Length: 289
Image 1 (spheres, rainbow, N blue to C red):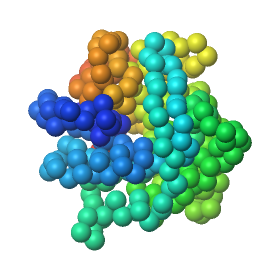
Image 2: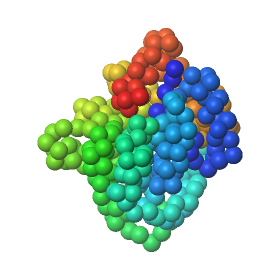
Image 3: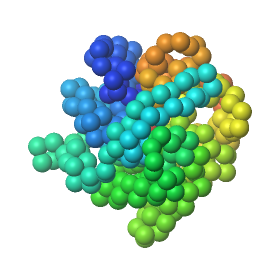
């Protein structure tokens, strides 16, 4: 079994064939956590997870770029990303309710996320950058509190803001009396020192198809993977985005997680089977699957 710890089969890119994609993945031993970015995609992830006895799970959260309306444009290596955002105010009780089914905590909801800071993309609106950053910080802190209340790990999204996010995370842990909640910094593109600081705070680091790319201005993922303890590494696709080069030109999907695992096995100088076993164990431990 393999666990794709960050997928978006709940997104519109899969609206016509999500059932087929999930069935194909489960048949080939790939489980997934579908991660929400707004209330509607979080709700959709929960409904999808509830349709399967095992293998499909959900994370619920409000992504920082969806705190403002606008058009998001960006490019990672050769991949162009463009989508529209619809402003949403984080509603603590509304999101909390998503974690329950028939008045009982839903075991298929395994994390709060993806939440965090994003200084890479900026909606093309009249809001001042400083104001937008403050909205992100406040929403992040509220969602950390929700994770704490529900005893769930956090899936962190962070672009060009690791120092600010780590500071907020340390302050919140201090507020909790030094008791961390755990989680993962997904699609990690920070420095080795920042990765080690996340680990020190009880977090995991997750990698996807970006590890195949050498992107100017970004740290080398291979060096970070070599240095990190293997019990703190997770794997993901972030599908439909960040397709590995072996499937370039196609929509990414959970099955393609195997290419990332194979690459990590090569970097760590271990077998593919050992890499599968360890990353799956790490995911099961963190998300209590």
